[in-house]
Image (tube, rainbow, N blue to C red):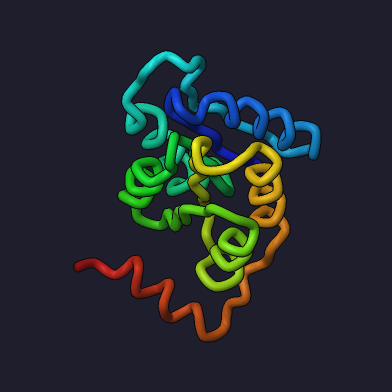
Length: 144
């Protein structure tokens, strides 16, 4: 699977660990930065990753920050992106099962690395349930 990956400075360390984890699992990773833990503005890195998912260049995306909140907000500005802020394995499972989340946002300051990797793995292997959830997802993409 081709996966977009991006972070700000506060998510940089986990981004690098997740990149290695995904590559070892056979995924193709497109890293949109940042490339250090020097302070940066998260939209500069999250927006290109979300755009890659929105256009189909990447199948899924993972974004990281200190809490993950701003990163999720930035990603969700793109039509067709469903970025879920995940804080544990169950939130990641439900994001795929019921919401067909094609992106997740993680907060490096909110969890340990083991939890972050477990969230990523759960999100990647959980299928979308479809059914009653499809009309709800269509409403997300309606023009307001």
